[in-house]
Amino acid sequence: MAFLDISGVRKVYGQHPVVREFNLSIERGEFVSFLGPSGCGKTTTLRMVAGFEQPTVGTIRIDGRDVTHLPPNQRKIGMVFQAYALFPNMTVADNIGFGLRVAKKPAAEIGPRVQEMLQLIKLPHLADRYPYQLSGGQQQRVALARAIANKPQVLLLDEPLSALDAKIRVSLREEIRTLQKALGITTIFVTHDQEEALSMSDRIVVMSEGRMEQVGDPFEIYNYPSTRFVAGFVGTLNILNAQVVDAGTGRLTIDGQEVTTTRSLDGHAAGTTCSVALRPEAVALGEPATGRNSLRGTIEEVGFLGSVVRVKVRLGGNAISLDMFNSSSVSPPKRGETASVVFAPEDLLVLAASADTAA
Amino acid sequence: MKSERFGPWLAMILGTLYFVVPLIATFEFSLRKRRGVYSFDAYQAVFADSRFIESFGYSTLIALITIVVGVLLIVPTAYVIRLRMPRLRPVVEFITLLPLVIPAIVIVFGYLRLYNSSSFLPMTASTRATDLLLVFAYVVLAMPYMYRAVDTGLRSIDVNTLTEAAESLGASWWTILFKVILPNVRVAVLSGAFLTFAIVIGEFTIASLLNRPAFGPYLQNVGANSAYEPSALAVIAFVVTWACMGLIQLFGRGARGSSAATR
Image 1 (spheres, chains in turn cyan, red):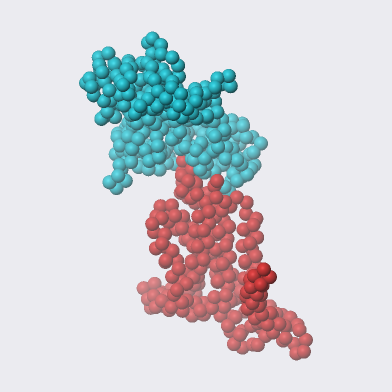
Image 2 (tube, rainbow over the protein chains, first blue to last red; image 1 turned 60 degrees about the vertical axis):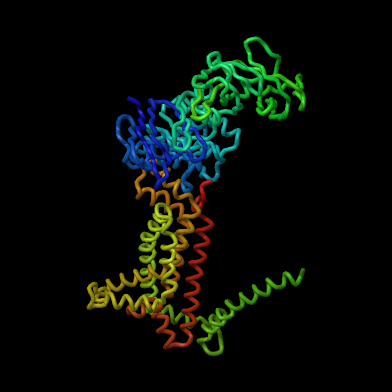
């Protein structure tokens, strides 16, 4: 049996469903991210696990215990908020020890545990500071230490990195992951940032409009998106209109140029139009080669992004964006030049035209 | 340029004179008890009067009880309204403003109608119960100030997130209110408390009609029978009020972390 079990959970506000039929089993020590755009229901689901919201239907079990109707203070959870939520009237040490004091732990236990947490977040020298004397990153580390000090069963992270600047975000997400692995604490991480979800999680739940679109590990989510939404939301995607030539052999034409795919074209009759997708990193500028697809077009845009150069190639009605590594010895292509884009047949994803299901 | 600066200065000088001249005149008059020279005789007479000490002590005690009752009533109310029933805020704000609209004399006549010795709850039948009624009346009178002060304090912190953070750490409502919320609105509560103190010390109508030995009725009584002592008492009342305001400033400046918004 899973450690954290969310079963048949739905949440409806008035007539408006916010979370529809959410089912998820999380193993002990697993790091699961809820990924999706604003309003997709990821935070509401997290808040239902925390006990701040009641599910309209469904049950939530932690370690076999039904907590669906338990108040938050009886669920043995630790939570980190986007706004840090440190108590302004307490020092860093008092903030970290708050949960322990509430649990009426003996003072002889609280002191060493607070020190241990301060060491863990590498801020032992700031024990006597007040929250307003700390930077955003430091405050969030303290919030994390406060959440795990009382050894909660589940750690809930509600967009904890969103308010931080880019560099601190990257370093803190690594710290969170290292800490989570070291402590083996079951964690749910809510984010709208695909990079965070992909880099930190054991599994990702991609959500849209209250629905679970796909559950899988980062590799699976990125490389084998099961719905058009996931394909579009996770990573950048080129979506192209193609015409099926022969579904059996995977032959298609894109703006009159023939390509093949190893993905299934079942259900597509010859001559029908379908949507196909290509990741920018799966495409390169180069000469046609046997066993690889090639499409000829004109360079429409060249964007310098630092370590990469993003190039947009116009084929006709379709356009393909691709990324090239920036190198001082290789000049980027120029606008208006003709060029060929090449890619492997297995990288050409086929998206269903009507249903949101990809092959 | 100069005329632009002159306008605000003139307004400020006129405003200051409007407030300060009567005060200086009162103070100056209070020093004239001894014919031909300035002296503090009026103040000596006031402080020598046992009724002054008694009435001031009584009003101070009533003020302190009023503050405690007011804080216990208004802080949780304002907190729950902000946290759980934000839609009710305009209604509650309207209710808290009523004591400013309804004169104290109307309130006290209402009380006397409702709680007189032949009513279903004869609070005016005993001294202690009347004292309690006086406290309740003062809680109502101070409510607009106390509620606004507390509500402003609550606005300066992220009440929802702090509550949820404390809840997730296992805290009960009692712990959240007294360990997390109240310490963070301490300055606001103190502001409300000192305003309440100032109101209660100078209040006359309710204390007089409930026949309680408060400072306000004493002030009026002295005023009706003496010339210089009322001026001395007025100056003392001003000093007490100013001291309260000074304390608000002092605590407001000295409070570390309190009423600070979470960043």
